[in-house]
Length: 345
Image 1 (cartoon, rainbow, N blue to C red):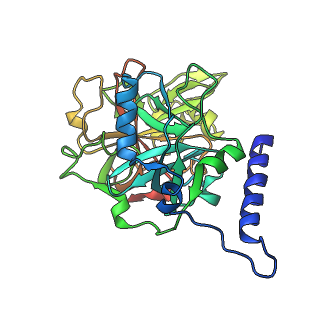
Image 2 (cartoon, rainbow, N blue to C red; image 1 turned 120 degrees about the vertical axis):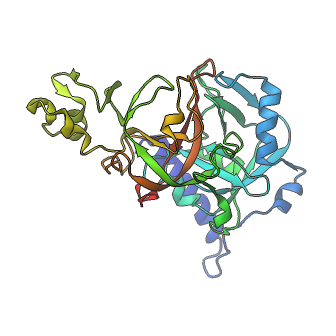
Image 3 (tube, rainbow, N blue to C red; image 1 turned 120 degrees about the horizontal axis):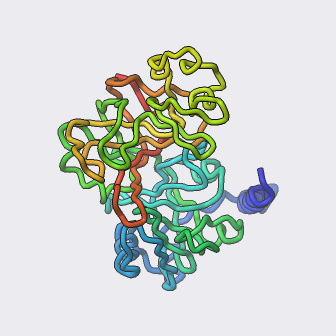
């Protein structure tokens, strides 16, 4: 844990301790905020849906462009936490969902957010002074970035977090918090409106092979030392195959048996799940019904096996989007909260 993270935790714990134990003999409960606390300060509520719409309208940015909007009005928003960074796939972020407008957004914070901002907890965010940014089609709430390559950055300073992020009640997760997509509705669901939401894909197929859309990547697709390796690759890096690098185990390459490589494939990298792979066509953008699960190397479940080719699963994940800088090669990606969120049928 770096010094900044340690300072963040120490300061936040001190704040919580002060709120809970301001009187040793008769400790007060930790304050849980409501809309009344913010309207009393003269702040105006804006829904997550309207906030995202204002971002696009204000910046006039293209989907893949680096674009920022520093909020200079006394606004606040709120939403229920629908994500968890406990298992490392989601990192330094929470995703907030507003049931009233069926819209969600990423709030960029520090690591270990699940300790203080657990799933099912309502959070309020004072927006004035924060920066909304776009990264390859995804809008998020964060701080001003020191790099021209990024639209915004994480809100890492503890005092800044305390000034802008406030815990509300914990109604808990309900069925309404999860959008359900299946073979009967995937063609009609507005995935753009659902970006950032928790989605359950029912009875979707795990697919191994080369997708004709995007960059013609083969899936499963792994990443090691910034070099891409897929299940069809016979290349090596420093004398090792991609499979040896990922698993540390001598493999099919040494034996000349490529088929062995697809028997054990893991979530680290990218995996393809689909309702209709034949509908892919020769497009630059992934057609409806095709999604890529992207898993960070920091996730605790990177060594969990991807369901075998053709296996049907129920899969629950945060729906996100990724394009190139020109806004082409759109791929709808899925970020798992936990490896257990993939259930083989």
